[in-house]
Amino acid sequence: MSFENISENLRVVNEKIDAALAKTGRSRESLTLIGVTKTIDLDRIRELVRLGVTQLGENRVQELLQKHGQEGFDNVSWHMIGQLQTNKVRQVVGKVSLIHSVDSLKLAQEIDKESKKRGIVSDILIEVNIAKEETKGGVLPELAKLLVKDALELANINIKGLMTVAPYVENPRMNEKYFEKMNELLVDMNENIVHNNSMVILSMGMTNDYEIAIEKGSTIVRLGSAIFGERYKNT
Ligand SMILES: *Cc1c(COP(=O)(O)O)cnc(C)c1O
Image (cartoon, rainbow, N blue to C red):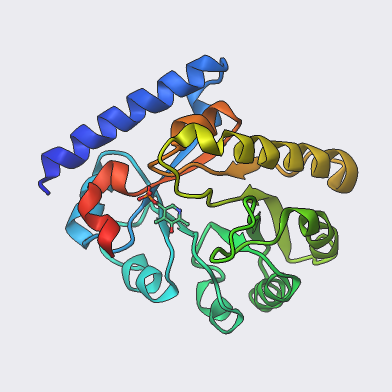
């Protein structure tokens, strides 16, 4: 994979993002693109940053920490998008701009505790297992409201919205109903639990289904293979 591919891939991605946004009359500012850099070497990540993508996502704590302080990433905001164990919370709090994968009160409490120690408030998303897949992380949709309600009591976390990893499907239209459900869940929470419409983020849509996700109200898409190529899927 050469550097030209990254810039060409990014050009195609941006075109598709624009087209999906146009369908519902949304502006480009209403959507954030996160480049998912897991398994990608530093030179290629630096190329992506040079091309203007400064929101980067990692799904493993170890890899995130290795890349975090490297040269050329001064303007990068890191996102923790993978499953997070409570015993690793200490290592990521203060280093990431958003933790996408909070799916239990225990984890929310741990992030709150570590944030308090550092005198900061950490932005988080609640991950929802919207298709109720056994192998996936995330709180079940019917328990999500309760989790948000409980987590709202914690002063050193700020619940910014919801995140999901939709099923891998041949036809991305199959995920339309799940993205709709996520949107409904967010609206419901804003109307009935948080009251000030403070949950503004819907992190949903990956390489396979981001255009549909955007049509259904996604505000953050997380793209890996669309940018860096299929090769990286194996790892
Ligand atoms: C790997 C990963 C992505 C990106 O997946 P692609 O299909 O390569 O775009 C997005 N979100 C999470 C949580 C991931 O682990």
